Length: 77
Ligand SMILES: [Zn+2]
Image 1 (spheres, protein in one colour):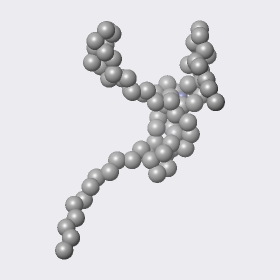
Image 2 (cartoon, rainbow, N blue to C red; image 1 turned 45 degrees about the vertical axis):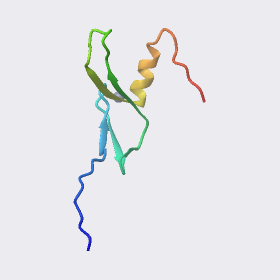
Image 3 (cartoon, protein in one colour; image 1 turned 60 degrees about the vertical axis):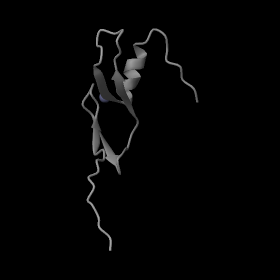
Image 4 (tube, rainbow, N blue to C red; image 1 turned 30 degrees about the vertical axis):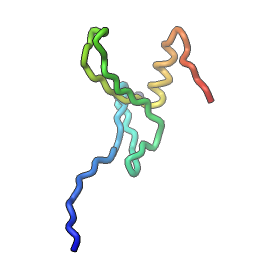
């Protein structure tokens, strides 16, 4: 005899860019396009001690963000 329990699973349906609101569909929990995801917990020496910040950017908003850098991001292939 076997007894089963029902498990609830969560899967990403879509990701919405926090900057421009563009929707990126996900198939089987995976985004169809590149997404820049941030999940940052600020530490004691910041002004946001203990705060957790998270957001997602679409690729074009990410590119715009990088253009604002004085020192370019390191990019390796
Ligand atoms: Zn965007």
